[in-house]
Length: 65
Image (cartoon, rainbow, N blue to C red):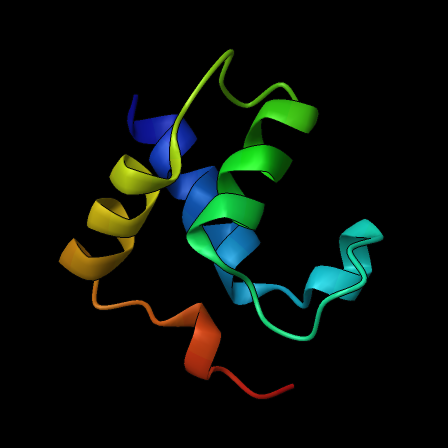
């Protein structure tokens, strides 16, 4: 689980365009979807993604690239 969390943090800190996402800022939903697309996790909903980001005090929606 720690590896998946680390990968989530890495995704959240990268620009969504790097992964072909037509958005300027990550949302919990987009991050959950990208984690499943990349096979990081089999399934995850946006709620735990948001919780993990909050615990780490990461706010990708406020990150400007």
